[in-house]
Length: 281
Image 1: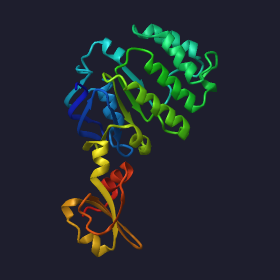
Image 2: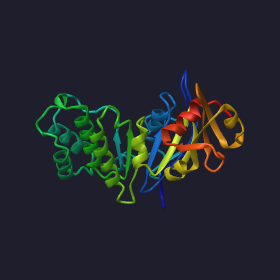
Image 3: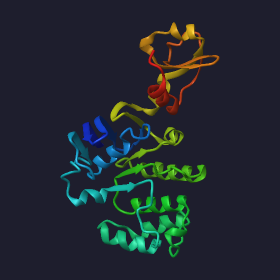
């Protein structure tokens, strides 16, 4: 299976922040969720993958090419959706269609019209009259209306209601039914990633903490609850972190190493929070 994204030791330095070593691999036919707190380096990573920023170190291949040196044809095969609609508010779908037709040799006007119809977007209505959900649907329609093999989305579901978020996730799942395609999606709504993603990559303080298959990750840990003494008795090598409460402790522990303690399922959000905020054991 080919990898549509490969990044090793990706680095970028700013005055007050450094992306200090990010590794990403995205196989064809998969959705990779990029997680991390605000300021962790997710958007910087996406900028480097798109060639919008020049890296200070590491290696990157997107669809087999270095994005900093790639020919414009590479962007025919990449659909990009950011957290805000890139088109002027005075435009309508008709105006957007004309711009896309001029910008992409592979633009499919019939597909764009079909997607706009599916999303309930009035071709004559101005974007300023759209809700946030409608603007995001327009961005998705634009990204899917040319020969995209790779979709890169930065916080596309932020601020959307659950119904619209589910609809967008369904679109991503449809997109990868063609196993030559893949999706990279960054989101703070981790429940969405838990539904749709095949892989999860966690960036913290500018570095990759882990990249795991989602199902393997969710099966790897449990939330163990007990007293201070019971939690302290666990094997520290198997404990990611501990959170202390008024009535006891909770620890993120590798499955099978929590003894007889009461355990709950650990979701992706739990795992990220314990890595960031849990006291080291």
